Image 1 (cartoon, helix red, strand yellow):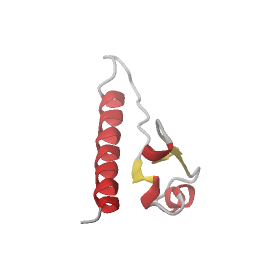
Image 2 (tube, helix red, strand yellow; image 1 turned 90 degrees about the vertical axis):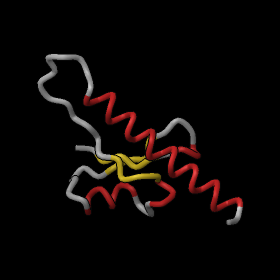
Image 3 (cartoon, one colour; image 1 turned 180 degrees about the vertical axis):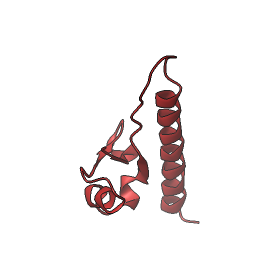
Image 4 (tube, helix red, strand yellow; image 1 turned 120 degrees about the vertical axis):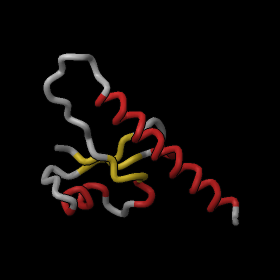
Length: 80
């Protein structure tokens, strides 16, 4: 495997873990919360050519946006 492929795989795995952590923290919120809006994560923006259009195609009419802590760790989240 080339170094670029290994680095890309690691970034994708880290983004997947970050998506799971985000969803877990939103779902496991304080007791008594009636409705929780969990933004769906489609994966790393580097693997999705157009995050906004991909979310529209998945049934989210408001589209989506790439969110992350740095430009190397952006993930595509759909808005509801």
